[in-house]
Length: 394
Image 1: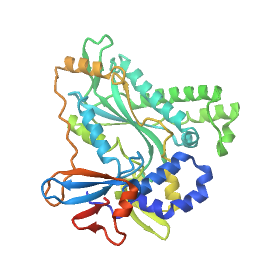
Image 2: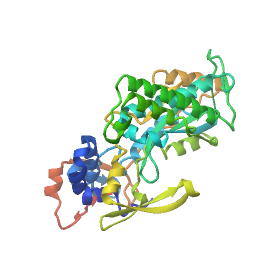
Image 3: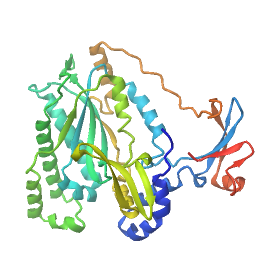
Image 4: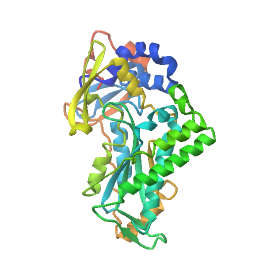
């Protein structure tokens, strides 16, 4: 994929200071940290390293990445490393993709209580799947699965939901056999939605009773006991959305699909179209109207406001494992599952991430680490090259 001509970093550098001057008092330090990291990513401000090709001797100075989990440019290597680790955990069975979405009515409460509500979304949706899977009327098995939290929609608006990747089957309660699920159907989504809704609202009421929820601004209108109970009753008017996609064709397709979801940020640089006169245009898909691709234009401040909606609280984990695949027993459970399925496939060897020379395809090795000050004094301001040493800012 070609390098985009416009990046989120460009918008932050142009409009970030004025945005922060206007909205900074209402934001927290993680928002400032995210903006600063993205703006400085792969610039001389973060230092860099001098690489040399072992074949042709070509040298290049590359600037360091910010490694922020919100930076559109820093997810590629992290994604590849994570997928290599997960490839060893795939089972030789079909996999389903299940999505749990919070209703729009909970959006404001979630934004005011991100850590609590996102944890609750994870816990109650996972419990709903585990509970229905144990039911003999459905699967009658202990299952394991992986979840990825997303908080955005295509328009970078607030749309919290969890993507789960689930094997079609599970272990019998005594661990004696593998129970195969249907290859066309996992669990009834209507039942999942109702169990999810019941568990979430019950837990939400408990949090309210313990005084753990924060009510700021417009949320103060539901801060009393009577108004909050009325708010909870309104959540039962409609069914909660649970979506299940048809199964994947095989483990390779599972990994390919996971790569689209695990380390994604709210908007990629490739979706940006234009930035003119303080307004940002970007592509988005309108799922409500035939999945049509459209272009949306927002002011730079509104674009940055929406982008920062998806900055998570410090330490909140976006990728989690549940049931059989929970961290405490994942290795033993996977070995048992493989044994019952008659599969002892060795993990695929990790692919080494190499820096290749564009001129001769030789391997480029780091020969010198450079601080920001060293880069500043070494590189002339009027050019991007010194002899055979070039600067790579991609």
